[in-house]
Image (cartoon, rainbow, N blue to C red; front, side):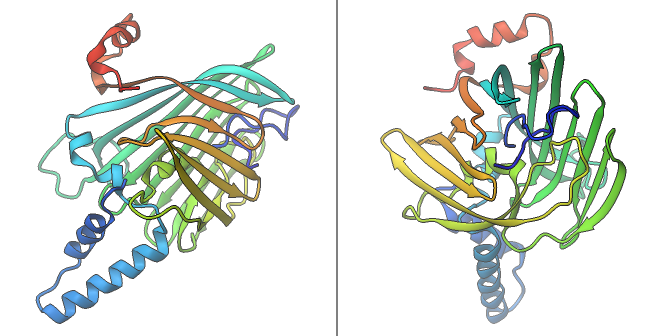
Length: 323
């Protein structure tokens, strides 16, 4: 299995954790509108080209929930609290892992939040934060992965990892500028490295999977599809970014959907709600690590940072996702 986080010099082989579209035609239509030109003939040609491009580059992943205005239009964030069991030195270590999803407008160069509604160049994106703190004996592993996806195309805009393993710090990031992406790594083990990468068609990063599996086109019959998958950035060494073939499969089971991602490191298994917004309920990783959803909330993002707000939110039935 692809490692999710390398733990210090003493555990180079362990990991912290690895790591809708009901209307696909609407997503294609949105792309076609963006490319529309004056003549009917050229419009049809561009629509056909854009449809073929999406089929090649996104397989059965779609903009889906990322582009859903009714879900994000209330300016609330999705908070998912997971009970985690993370494999360290061949042992499962208990901790809590938090996933936060939120739509916001960001500066296209700095990725800083933009509040000015007149900024025409701002990108509208869905941001995912994964945050964890895992005690390891006398030490602690802490980390955060942040991902930005553009809502117009569901394309990755930026992916970052920051963390510490109690021996030192690491930061890595991928920033997409079209066909070429820029990769930067600064770790206490290997120093600073930068390099351009050229992601192949239909390529994704492992760290995107918690949202990507929720954007599968459920309107189609269950069928395997292939992607190109790069490993997690959440490691303390400077890695060569390499995309390798992976296979995604899924099947509905009563109230849930089971998704499997078979990649070079093994098989990750996901259990999602069968109904929108397709919450990720369980995540079984190839190294034995596990995530199980304890609580899902939808809350005003900026209004829950005071002492006692967590307990207040947990007790508010209006914030609860239905079970």
